[in-house]
Each structure stands twice: as C-alpha cells, then as structure tokens.
Image (cartoon, rainbow, N blue to C red; front, side, top):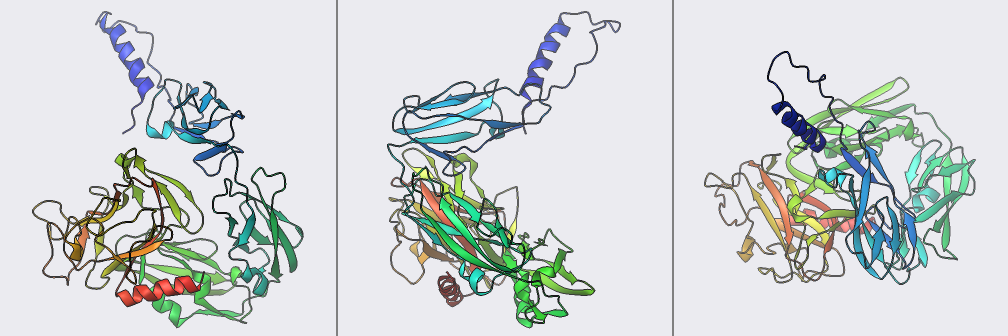
Length: 509
C-alpha cells in the first residue's frame, strides 16, 4: 500500500490544532481540508548518453541537463531533487544538472522534493564515466534476407534486427533512413513499412558519437496488394494451436493457406473471444497469457470471408521467451535486481548485492498467483541462460541456479520445496543439454527432470496435476559477475523433443 505522506503530515497538523481548540459542536474550524495530491510516479527521460534505459556512458568533464516526467499532472507539489551517490565520479545539482569528474561509476537518483516516496517515485540512472568510447566497427543485419526474397506488402510492417561489432561497443544505437521513402519508410526503431509496390533501400548508421560512424544498407521489396479469394486454417496449424503453452507467441499468419497463394495475408483482421487466455493483435500475433489450462476462439476475417480456429492452453506446458522483456515473470524484490535491457533475442538482468550477487527469477509467487504442472506429460523444464561463472553441480562456490517449487511449503505439501535431482543438492542440480560442463562464454541450455528428488516432498505418484504456489529460479551467490542473460524457459515431454527444438532454433538463426 502506498503511503500518502503529505496527506498524513497535514492531517497530523490539523489534529494537533484541533486538539487545542474547543470541542464544542458550534466551533467553526474554517471549512473542510482539501485532499493533497502527492507524486505517484517519476519517469526518467532518456538522454543522448543513454546506452540503454538504465545506463549512461560519459567522458570526464562532460555536462548534461537531466529531466524527468512527474505524475499525476495535478500533484500539488511536483518539485523533485537529484542526488549523486559518488560525487568523486559525477556531481548533480538539485535541479538535475550533471557534471562528470573522474572515471568510475555512480548512481544518480531523483526523488520528490520531500526527499522520499514509494519506489515508483525514486528512479535512478547508473552513470558510467569512462576514459573513451568504444565505437561500432561493423553493423550486422540479422533478419533482412526475407525482405529481399519475399518482401512485405503495401502497408505491412517488419521489425529489422541488427547487431554491432565489437561486442564491447559502448553505444549500440542506430539511425535509420529510407533512401526511397515513396516506396518504404522506416521509423527510429527499425520498423520498415511498405508504402507502394517497388524496391527501396534502407540505410542504418551507427549513433555512437564517432566522427566517422559506420553504416550499412539493405533492400526491401514491397509487393502490391492482392485480394484474398479464400483461405483456410491448415491442419498442421490446428493441431499445433491445440497444445499451446503459457507465454507462447505465435504468428497466426503462418497458420492459413491462401487462395491465390500469393494473396496479401495482411488483409486479414484478427480477434479473440477470450483475451485473458490468448490475445491476438492487429498483425495476427497470438500471445498466451493463461498460467492454467484454457481455451479461446480466434476469428479471422477479410471482406465477406470469416473463419475461426480454437486454441487451447495445455496444462503444464510452459513456453516463454524473453527477447523483449520478462513479461509476466518478475524479479525477487528483496534482491534489488533489475532489467538492464532486451535486444530482441534475450533480456539482461543485473543482480543486486555487493560481495555476492543475487537476482531470483520468479514465475509463481506464494499468495499472488498459482500454476499447474503435469510432470507425467511435460516432464522436463528447460532454460536458456548465459552467466559468466563456471557453475559446478552440488556447489555454490561460483554461484548457483536452483529450481524452487512447491504446492505447500509446510508439512501438507506433496511436491517441493527445492529440487535436488540426482545430485542430492539444490545447488546446480540441473543437467546441461548434450552433456559437458557449464559454459561461461556462451549461452547454456539446462534442464531439470521434474520426476526427480526434492528436499522435503518427493511424490510417489507422478500421474497427477500439481497446483503450485511457488515456482522460481534462485540465481544467487555470484562473485565474479553481477549479471546474466535469460533467453527462454520451456517445458518438454522428452529430452529428445528438447534437443529437436534447440536444433531447429540453431538452424533458423
């Protein structure tokens, strides 16, 4: 519950005054108090030196005016003040004028003028003062081949993904320009939109303060709109849509067969009759929201044609990707961990702590939500993660990843609390896919056999559904690194199914 500090202060003062006044019913205290509107949130505005939403990189003796957006608009006092944690690195005036001094790192925080408030009113930037910037030397295009071979239709949009070399480049930011805006336009985030049939060239330039920034170009084919005479959901798609998992994202445009085959699929409009289970956006991208089993009917329409297909969430199936954030997952608040960035492939988490770093990754939190697992069907829970520490089975000396799940943490539980597997220790009791040791310079696919041992309650009958009040990954005890990259969490029926998925993922890169 958020505390309205100003209202509390004024109410207390009023009560003190009233306490020294007569208690007579006829006493006129000057009318009723008006409610004081305090600041509910402060959002930091991005700057020219932001490498991501959290981190600024600057050279010594640089200056910048920081700013923020304060809500609500009708707050009685919208004043804020700024502070720097380490003034040997950078100083900031009370009104947000920042001056860097020496190489190092500091945290600059903004708070309401009264100096405190709920967490939404005390955001911060990490200021990294460096002796030089590492410039981008090469821009690599990750998914533009399809724009050349197949193209997109007029009015259709496509998100282009790029990366930069070296990996240590300070600012992985880009400026986008269409050299043929009458054919295709591109926005500041790299979304290309068709305007009319033809071929356009798109230019991408590094935005990294270099005097001679590198750039690259690619072409995009814009196809004319061809009307749809008929369409059907394919049998393959119907089967797949019958067993979706929590967090799954699926492009419904791939699920229909068009007549003619080169008709413009973007002419189809989409809707869901149960968005709490599975929603669909205007581009036909379906997202599963239900942690439990459920169903929805998807309607696809164009002109006078209307078709429907049923989607079902399979109990116990998890299929969550973190290329654009952590979605419905959360970070354990007591760890002081935070999301640093997402790059279209993974999300980077900065762990909290000083001597030892920790950043637990939570799906189901006791008293907040529930989910169900079916180890007899979806037996293997897998994660793709990159953390630069040589983890060892049974030991937390270099850090650990623990799977913690339970239906009841007390004596009444039937499964949980900590997974111990064949290692008989909660510390790193996972298996690394295809064997071998945990890699520190590349992402690992690790998995847990849910039909295994737990420290308190190991079921004797696996042919049942378990309703969980907790499911999280304890990611803790790191000394050599303070961050990790999370790609996805999924459940599989067999290890062979997991291997096939990873192989297909590698092939489709």
